Image 1 (cartoon, rainbow, N blue to C red):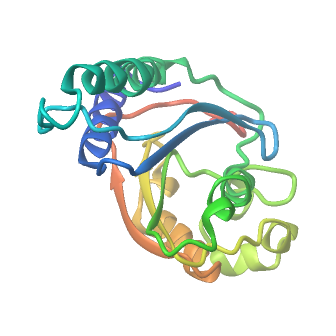
Image 2: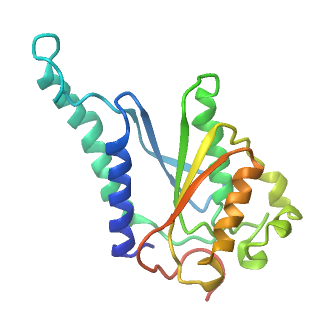
Length: 211
Protein backbone atom coordinates (compact mmCIF):
# COMPACT_ATOMS: atom_id res chain seq x y z
CA UNK A 1 0.00 0.00 0.00
CA UNK A 2 1.28 3.43 -0.97
CA UNK A 3 0.01 6.86 0.12
CA UNK A 4 -1.36 9.40 -2.39
CA UNK A 5 1.67 11.63 -1.76
CA UNK A 6 4.16 8.88 -2.57
CA UNK A 7 2.10 7.77 -5.55
CA UNK A 8 2.10 11.28 -6.98
CA UNK A 9 5.89 11.48 -6.63
CA UNK A 10 6.34 8.02 -8.20
CA UNK A 11 4.05 8.88 -11.13
CA UNK A 12 5.88 12.14 -11.77
CA UNK A 13 9.24 10.37 -11.78
CA UNK A 14 7.99 7.57 -14.01
CA UNK A 15 6.52 10.00 -16.52
CA UNK A 16 9.76 12.03 -16.50
CA UNK A 17 11.82 8.88 -17.14
CA UNK A 18 9.52 7.91 -20.02
CA UNK A 19 9.69 11.39 -21.54
CA UNK A 20 13.48 11.40 -21.23
CA UNK A 21 13.83 8.07 -23.05
CA UNK A 22 15.14 8.36 -26.60
CA UNK A 23 13.19 7.25 -29.66
CA UNK A 24 13.91 3.55 -30.18
CA UNK A 25 14.79 2.96 -26.53
CA UNK A 26 13.02 -0.08 -25.08
CA UNK A 27 11.01 0.22 -21.88
CA UNK A 28 9.71 -2.72 -19.87
CA UNK A 29 7.73 -2.42 -16.64
CA UNK A 30 7.02 -5.29 -14.26
CA UNK A 31 5.01 -5.63 -11.07
CA UNK A 32 6.59 -7.58 -8.23
CA UNK A 33 4.61 -9.90 -5.98
CA UNK A 34 5.14 -11.83 -2.76
CA UNK A 35 5.71 -15.01 -4.78
CA UNK A 36 9.42 -15.69 -5.18
CA UNK A 37 10.65 -14.46 -8.57
CA UNK A 38 7.15 -13.95 -9.99
CA UNK A 39 6.83 -10.96 -12.33
CA UNK A 40 3.79 -9.53 -14.07
CA UNK A 41 4.59 -7.62 -17.24
CA UNK A 42 2.71 -4.33 -17.30
CA UNK A 43 4.33 -2.84 -20.39
CA UNK A 44 6.93 -3.68 -22.99
CA UNK A 45 7.84 -1.78 -26.12
CA UNK A 46 10.22 0.57 -27.87
CA UNK A 47 9.54 4.29 -27.77
CA UNK A 48 8.30 5.36 -31.22
CA UNK A 49 8.69 8.70 -32.92
CA UNK A 50 5.61 10.84 -32.22
CA UNK A 51 5.92 12.53 -35.62
CA UNK A 52 6.24 16.08 -34.30
CA UNK A 53 9.61 16.57 -36.03
CA UNK A 54 8.82 14.45 -39.10
CA UNK A 55 8.54 15.88 -42.59
CA UNK A 56 5.15 15.44 -44.24
CA UNK A 57 6.99 14.99 -47.54
CA UNK A 58 9.13 12.02 -46.52
CA UNK A 59 6.99 10.41 -43.82
CA UNK A 60 3.49 10.32 -42.37
CA UNK A 61 3.39 12.46 -39.21
CA UNK A 62 -0.32 11.75 -38.64
CA UNK A 63 0.18 7.97 -38.69
CA UNK A 64 3.26 8.29 -36.50
CA UNK A 65 1.28 10.33 -33.96
CA UNK A 66 -1.53 7.76 -34.00
CA UNK A 67 0.84 4.84 -33.40
CA UNK A 68 2.66 6.74 -30.66
CA UNK A 69 -0.61 7.38 -28.81
CA UNK A 70 -2.17 3.93 -29.32
CA UNK A 71 0.83 1.69 -28.74
CA UNK A 72 2.95 3.77 -26.37
CA UNK A 73 1.32 6.71 -24.61
CA UNK A 74 -2.04 5.12 -23.74
CA UNK A 75 -0.66 1.80 -22.43
CA UNK A 76 1.89 3.64 -20.29
CA UNK A 77 -0.82 5.96 -18.95
CA UNK A 78 -2.68 2.84 -17.79
CA UNK A 79 0.44 1.64 -15.98
CA UNK A 80 0.95 4.91 -14.12
CA UNK A 81 -2.77 4.97 -13.34
CA UNK A 82 -2.57 1.54 -11.72
CA UNK A 83 0.33 2.24 -9.37
CA UNK A 84 -2.11 2.45 -6.46
CA UNK A 85 -3.14 -1.21 -6.72
CA UNK A 86 -0.35 -2.58 -4.55
CA UNK A 87 -1.25 -5.12 -1.88
CA UNK A 88 0.43 -6.16 1.37
CA UNK A 89 2.12 -9.59 1.28
CA UNK A 90 3.61 -12.11 3.66
CA UNK A 91 7.06 -11.78 2.16
CA UNK A 92 9.02 -9.35 0.01
CA UNK A 93 11.43 -11.16 -2.36
CA UNK A 94 13.09 -8.13 -3.95
CA UNK A 95 16.37 -9.88 -4.74
CA UNK A 96 14.59 -12.79 -6.44
CA UNK A 97 12.62 -10.32 -8.56
CA UNK A 98 15.76 -8.48 -9.66
CA UNK A 99 17.41 -11.82 -10.42
CA UNK A 100 14.46 -12.85 -12.60
CA UNK A 101 14.38 -9.48 -14.40
CA UNK A 102 18.07 -9.85 -15.17
CA UNK A 103 17.55 -13.35 -16.59
CA UNK A 104 14.26 -12.62 -18.36
CA UNK A 105 14.90 -9.12 -19.66
CA UNK A 106 18.52 -8.01 -19.70
CA UNK A 107 20.02 -11.33 -20.77
CA UNK A 108 18.09 -11.04 -24.04
CA UNK A 109 20.39 -8.14 -24.91
CA UNK A 110 23.63 -9.24 -23.24
CA UNK A 111 25.46 -9.59 -26.57
CA UNK A 112 24.50 -6.06 -27.62
CA UNK A 113 26.64 -3.10 -26.65
CA UNK A 114 23.79 -0.92 -25.42
CA UNK A 115 23.24 0.83 -22.07
CA UNK A 116 20.98 -1.03 -19.65
CA UNK A 117 19.24 0.44 -16.63
CA UNK A 118 17.03 -0.97 -13.89
CA UNK A 119 14.80 1.26 -11.75
CA UNK A 120 13.33 -0.35 -8.62
CA UNK A 121 10.32 1.25 -6.91
CA UNK A 122 10.11 -0.40 -3.47
CA UNK A 123 10.53 -0.02 0.28
CA UNK A 124 13.60 -2.25 -0.26
CA UNK A 125 12.90 -4.34 2.86
CA UNK A 126 13.92 -7.86 1.84
CA UNK A 127 11.88 -10.49 3.70
CA UNK A 128 12.00 -14.18 2.71
CA UNK A 129 12.76 -17.51 4.43
CA UNK A 130 16.25 -17.31 2.89
CA UNK A 131 17.02 -13.92 4.41
CA UNK A 132 15.02 -11.25 6.22
CA UNK A 133 16.03 -7.71 7.03
CA UNK A 134 13.44 -7.68 9.80
CA UNK A 135 15.69 -10.21 11.54
CA UNK A 136 19.14 -9.09 10.36
CA UNK A 137 18.64 -5.38 9.75
CA UNK A 138 20.95 -3.71 7.24
CA UNK A 139 24.10 -5.62 8.22
CA UNK A 140 25.64 -6.75 4.93
CA UNK A 141 28.06 -9.10 6.69
CA UNK A 142 25.08 -10.87 8.29
CA UNK A 143 23.51 -11.21 4.85
CA UNK A 144 26.69 -12.83 3.51
CA UNK A 145 26.29 -15.54 6.13
CA UNK A 146 22.69 -16.26 5.12
CA UNK A 147 21.27 -18.69 2.55
CA UNK A 148 20.07 -15.71 0.53
CA UNK A 149 23.62 -14.61 -0.28
CA UNK A 150 24.16 -17.54 -2.63
CA UNK A 151 20.50 -18.09 -3.59
CA UNK A 152 20.11 -14.59 -4.99
CA UNK A 153 23.56 -14.11 -6.50
CA UNK A 154 22.91 -12.20 -9.73
CA UNK A 155 25.33 -11.03 -12.42
CA UNK A 156 24.44 -7.36 -12.95
CA UNK A 157 27.45 -6.58 -15.14
CA UNK A 158 26.85 -3.48 -17.31
CA UNK A 159 23.49 -2.77 -15.66
CA UNK A 160 22.92 0.54 -13.90
CA UNK A 161 20.61 0.39 -10.87
CA UNK A 162 18.51 3.22 -9.47
CA UNK A 163 16.19 2.88 -6.47
CA UNK A 164 13.05 4.90 -5.74
CA UNK A 165 12.69 4.27 -2.03
CA UNK A 166 9.26 4.05 -0.35
CA UNK A 167 9.46 5.16 3.29
CA UNK A 168 7.54 2.77 5.59
CA UNK A 169 8.17 4.92 8.65
CA UNK A 170 10.37 2.29 10.33
CA UNK A 171 13.40 4.08 11.86
CA UNK A 172 15.95 1.33 11.15
CA UNK A 173 15.02 1.29 7.46
CA UNK A 174 15.00 5.02 6.83
CA UNK A 175 18.72 5.71 7.23
CA UNK A 176 21.79 5.66 5.04
CA UNK A 177 22.82 2.20 6.29
CA UNK A 178 19.77 0.61 4.67
CA UNK A 179 20.51 2.09 1.24
CA UNK A 180 24.21 1.36 1.72
CA UNK A 181 23.25 -2.30 2.11
CA UNK A 182 21.64 -2.26 -1.33
CA UNK A 183 24.56 -0.37 -2.86
CA UNK A 184 26.81 -3.13 -1.49
CA UNK A 185 24.52 -5.79 -2.93
CA UNK A 186 24.56 -4.19 -6.38
CA UNK A 187 28.34 -3.71 -6.33
CA UNK A 188 28.80 -7.24 -5.00
CA UNK A 189 26.91 -8.52 -8.03
CA UNK A 190 29.03 -6.41 -10.43
CA UNK A 191 26.30 -3.88 -11.10
CA UNK A 192 26.58 -0.08 -11.25
CA UNK A 193 24.87 1.64 -8.33
CA UNK A 194 23.67 4.92 -9.81
CA UNK A 195 21.56 6.58 -7.14
CA UNK A 196 18.71 6.25 -4.65
CA UNK A 197 15.97 8.78 -4.11
CA UNK A 198 13.49 8.77 -1.24
CA UNK A 199 9.96 9.34 -2.46
CA UNK A 200 7.89 11.88 -0.59
CA UNK A 201 5.40 10.78 2.07
CA UNK A 202 5.31 8.00 4.69
CA UNK A 203 3.63 4.65 4.04
CA UNK A 204 3.00 2.44 7.08
CA UNK A 205 2.40 -1.23 6.41
CA UNK A 206 3.92 -3.83 4.11
CA UNK A 207 5.27 -7.36 4.39
CA UNK A 208 6.88 -8.96 7.43
CA UNK A 209 6.29 -8.71 11.15
CA UNK A 210 3.59 -6.62 12.82
CA UNK A 211 4.91 -3.32 14.07
